[in-house]
Structures are given as C-alpha cells and as structure tokens.
Image (cartoon, rainbow, N blue to C red; front, side):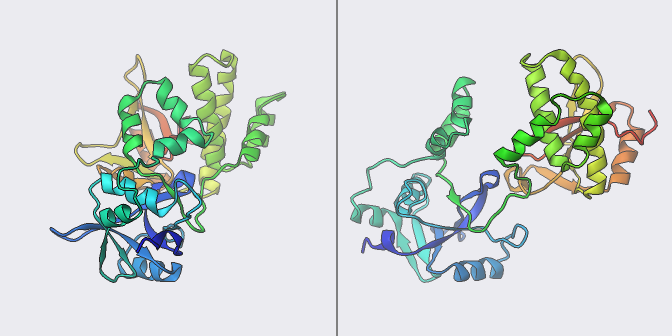
Length: 320
C-alpha cells in the first residue's frame, strides 16, 4: 500500500554534492535487469550492505540518507518522481524483492505531478548558484540541474574542507589594515592551506572582475608563500591530474604567454565526478622536481575540483 511515505526509510546514496553534504540515491543495475534504488528500514542495515558490497567510505562515513516526509526535496515521492523520469523503474527494501516505482506513484495519485529538482533546491538555498547559472545564460547546465534529482542530506557526514560563514569573515578581515607583508604573513600562516586558497581564489576573481583596486594583487604572493608552507606543515595530500585520453598532466595556459600552471588537487573526494581523469597522488619532493625541471611551468593551480582554484607561484625553496 501507499504507506512507504510514513515509514522510516534509509537510502544508499551516491556522492553528488559532497561540498553541500548531500548525495542522491545510488542506482543498482543488474545486467539486463531493472534499475532500482536501495532502501532499508535501518541505518545499520544500509551500512552493512555498503560494507559487504565494497562501497567507498569517506573518512569512515558511509553515504546514507533518510527520507523526510516533511521536506519537499528529501521525501520519498519526490525522489521516486525524479528517478522514474530517468528510467529507474524499481526500488528494493531490505534486499527483499523489487517494488515498482510507477505503481507506487499511481497509488498515491502522483504519477503525473512534477518533481522538485537540484535546480529548485539551489534556487531556494540562498547560495546564489541558480542566479549565477541564469545570469551567465548557462542553458545546458540549467537543463542538467533541472533533470537532476534533488540531493538528500548525508547522515553524519562532514566536508573536510568546510569553511563556515563566521570563519570566512575572519579570513577576509585578516588582510584589512595590514602595515606590512611580514605582518600579513604572520597573521595568515596559522590558517589551513585550503582557507588561504579560498581567500586567494576570491581575490583573484575580484581582481579579474575589476572590483578590487589593482594594488591588492601584491597580497597574492604572500598568500602563495603561506599556502606552500602550510601544505608542508599540514601534510596536505597532493594529486596530479591526468586526462586518461591524453598524455601528460593537466595544465592551465596563461593568457598571452607560453607559460603555464600545473593543476594539483588537494583531495580526491570528488574524483567520481571525473571518470576521465586519473588522480595521481604525488609527494611534495616529486612535485618540486617537476616544477624545477619544466621551464614552461611558472607555478601551480591548487584546487579541490569542486569550484575552488588558487594560482600559486613556485614555492620559495626552488631556485628561480
């Protein structure tokens, strides 16, 4: 019967918007069989299933969501409506037999009604993402977001590079009223490398858009030095990015120049979104060698592969 809405149900998730602590239901597909999503009556059973079937965990956290009937995005019906549009026909509860999504929606009288999408979620969450997509006229991206199911919160998941709004305010206050570069370096050298990258990325964007006075650009090398220092002290993980279709590592060409920056990611948490890219972990000493030996490289684009990119000069310990 149409009672699933009121049952306490957990769902196995696929990493989708980890930065926003959300995932979308994982779709299981046996060869030539139906596609279905995996539901469980208990969190522990969902977790056991994921461990048994070699799902990836994120710092010990398995990606599991819980349907919430009172949340217009994260409720069962909305998920079923989104997925039936994508050709997912069934669901399975507690690994016991398949149920038909279409039959369930029909019982609820919902088979024709529309669903809320990722785009709707962004339009309402105050992040400005939907406005950004609209302003830039990114029609393709908008259609993709409208087709994508809304994300469900991942239980007990924390994003390792989270910067709270309060922290962001502190970070941006650090370079105001600075008397000297040394004073700035002392102030920011205690920050995490990804925090300084976040500030750099923001400064670079605002300089490019002409919103900040040009002399602010003189702060960037100070941040760059602090980032290199904290990469070492925080023992950040470093990944070179290799396009599986091409030779060599991914680089960013600098405008009007034959020089370039080499991409280095500090996490592979988003690697599932880039199946064509190999994330190749590298030690700092080997990265230093690459930067030293390739004269066309003038630095590194340090990134999280989820929208944050900071352009760093070569580290100070390399001979210029």
